[in-house]
Image (cartoon, rainbow, N blue to C red; front, side, top):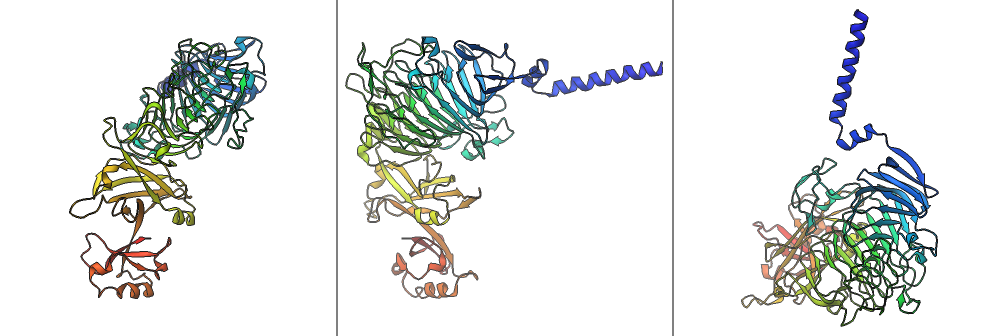
Length: 593
């Protein structure tokens, strides 16, 4: 009896422990315990893990499709040919962990074979996580005539790194002005507050995604003759290349030139956007929050934005639609583009802008009624023959960030304006720390602790994400150029920031400033260096040199070049200023020439 009671008690204890374990495990894991996840190989060499075949996904061989049916997370790795289909109405979550997938072999015999390597069907959504330290390729056979990652008009795509921009309750973490705009606890347990740095949303070793589009299609977005759906770029490093008339090497995407490439009369193959729309199609809404983007357009299509226009009938027909496309009339625009943060490079070619419009016409303006808004981040647009930013019929608004624009004539459309009221135009102000940051091997370092002041008062201006070869390009109200009738000077601009050095440590910079915006010194900000002559570590020769100036009146001291103070730091000759607020004659500040 004692043995039976002992066994019975043991069994009850085991059940209690198992029940407690099940209660403590998150719900998706409970489901996984209920039905063990499988690992299968598809498409000749691609491994799928994390779900159950026949429940979470189905696999067919004709056409080559893996159809995702549930929201159970699936992880893909390995190499093969085929299509990952996100079925209508499904809200899918996949992890790319070293995937190299290509659309079905060239010249498909039926429309059913013309599926993108990753294909979002109408009313579906997909969240892609790029696994840390992995490089993933999504390629198209050109004759398949499909986008690399296809986003149907009513679908939505989000791409992120391993630090998911979501709170524990599923709320999306918004970004605005280069800073976090939603408070709470991330899925990884990190607490975030409004105004926190974007560094909190970035993985230490983010995954890489490289995508190529087929004839007449976007790399990421729509295929021919259709509108793309919603796209959100929250993290990771992403390369997107439309086909531009020559072979594209995803590992060296800028190497090939562009060329016009008409096919079958009115169908143009070199006509899609890098991110946006395919030939004759259009875009809807795109948000760039915290990702690194490198986007390349085509002969006729933008780097990020619009494709070759559609004018109805067969004019500039983009070729047949993909099977997953809706048949609504394309809007033939770049859509609304909102850049809140991240590091974005976009290249337009012969007929395409870097960001925004492309090869359009009066009958089909490339940005009609659309807004391109920059609130933060760092943008590097390039378009030798067209415009860097904007589009025909559209509006450009800039409230933050750094944008290296070749000249004011490189904006297309209405703007740049400081807000939606369109009352204040903008002027570019340069911060140049190239020489000093090069010496510190930090000329392309990330930025934190951003603050902008105008005439000593904090000014709302969104944070750049990183330096561009040691420089930043700010866009401020041209009202600050107006001279004060009493002082005869324009506004005093000051910037305070930190940067992240190659060891991952935040380093503080002394404030950068321009005393007279647009004055004799131009609109390039310089840096203060604070020197206290009572500091026992100060080089004696430097102390003696500065002390020699003390007998002079203060006005004679201002802007006096001190060429022999190399011991006080790097970066060129120093100029003497009395430090604001200093009450001792031995406390001075200097600025770099």
